[in-house]
Length: 230
Image 1 (tube, rainbow, N blue to C red):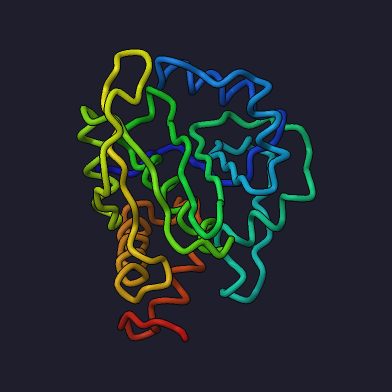
Image 2: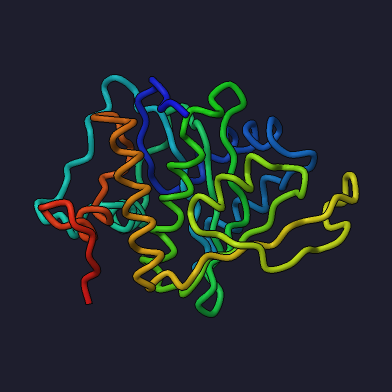
């Protein structure tokens, strides 16, 4: 899978993004959430919604804090929670997370149709896993259509494993939903896996990698040995 040539960044979703997010939903799902659902979700303190967007040419890159531990999606979430200017940038994809009693649940993830299979969805998955860890969640769960083998391959690549099936879950065609969960997010096994996947992403994207990569920096020692800070 090659990284997209489109320059992009990630930030929390804003109300002005909803129209573009709904366009991506139309391309991605048989049924859609109404606009009011997103308006409510953006006020939900237990939810985290992120978008990956193409910055306009005159939009300066956000300043990075000097401390590497403050880089990454957590810093971006904190930076933008206070609001920001109306969105002018094209939205390329989005992801949503609910945080419930220590269990993060990915409720949606989608990418513009013409930009799929270029690594954008995988970057969004990493971003939402980092957001779940920043929110103190113990595991992350999700469900996918049993026929969506590409989704299954991506989730298994990041340590998700099947924990059940919901029969006839999807109302449009009565297709089954497969339930998946990560290992404990704090476990050495998962953190090493995530750090390795982030480094693989960074090598593919090069200077265009849209995440600041603070999580990988905290897990990978200068000599390349992977370690866990206690």
